[in-house]
Length: 306
Length: 261
Image (cartoon, rainbow over all chains, first blue to last red; front, side, top):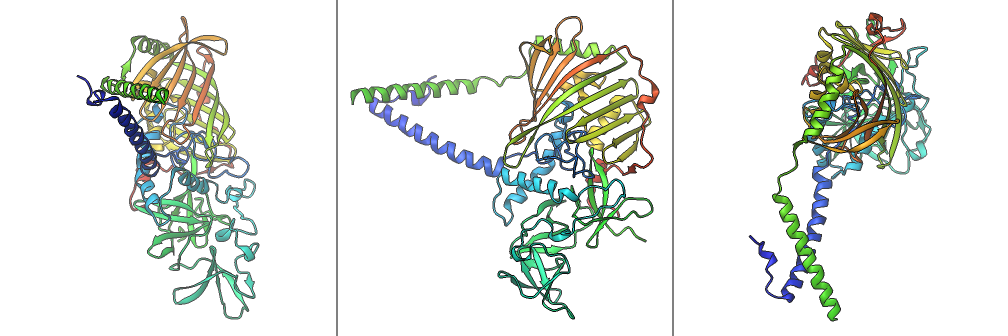
């Protein structure tokens, strides 16, 4: 049986139909592409690298530094392959690559729908990339001393471009506020927020002092160097060891709940073994290193000290 | 003008024919299954490995990484893998991203990162097949080229394959091979199997088609050795005293809703 559109009434209609078809085709192609980019993109994530998704017997959370090279979100950021790198069986549907992807689908959608607006795949990759590479230079056990020293410009504010404040350390003070800041209140105290950094007036100290992000503070925009981390249905943003959650009106500084897992420690985290179990501590948050797949990941835990 | 109209008509007719062709194609059932030739070659390779209880091989590996910009970066690795059934497994991989060693001796699995001096141990009893499944599903990593370590590589390779076909004849490192291609759900993969009496896998290529930029993993398999006796000590973990032991985060723990401190 012939398709109806193969029986045009006249050459003129024929031509017209062709144009209509072409136009329709174009329209469809266009909207289709847009839809896919927004809604159906499937990721990989660093899941060949993310917690389990790791790639080779390769890169490691403990490592970084010299060993860690790029490690974006492709098949290889190195590790042995929680994502099934190098194995057909390991890439199957009920484990490995498919397994990881299925798990991530929901959170991907969440990220796209959050207040940052829709995220396309490249943005998502960048998120993961950031998570992977945040504080790269510092994220390894110093093998000789088993200590994890950050640089002088470490911790919450590492890697941020803070204009006039660049180069300042936690606890440092400045005579006047930066040109652009907003005043926020957390725990009844006023703070001055400027591009990820918090300043406060402290008794006995002239000027304004750079302080750790105060829990409860709500800011309109995330600092510039944050990576999303997921726990159950919740999305957190790890900004150099300061954690934020999306709330109405912006992002709120929160104390990260136990169970959150990150790929790299904030710079400045200190190795603090408790009863011969390795832990890291930074800004009052405790992290325990685990092998998640063939790579080391860090899980936020309750203070293990008795 | 006449020419233009004629041209328009021609384009129109072509478009409609193409449209009709597309319609017809849609009616054709999707390709599925495996050609007999593919099946028998894959089985021959699988059976060849199955007849040996103990073997080792090496692999030169190249794999893609994808930068956030979409740019691909190629990394390299070399793998050295030994298996002795029923329960001995050793894998050593050195890559541009670091190295790992893996031992299984029938009682415990040990994963070691010599560069960072960290390791993890998991008590697990069973044969190598069970240990491989345990790693993939519970410990969530896959030893490289694990497909050729399962007792039945055919089963491991084709478990979720939807379609397989013969591509042609192609030499790998000077060895004439039959080249096959498969479609899987999350990946596409290709295998080159040596022609003749010794149907060994000589090359494996995996395309991670669901990942952005579809990165690939390519392994040239070499130095197949079925004769050297593999000693017990090869499968026993050898960890330096100053290495730091970390726990494995197992699948069950990973999905725990409220983790216990």
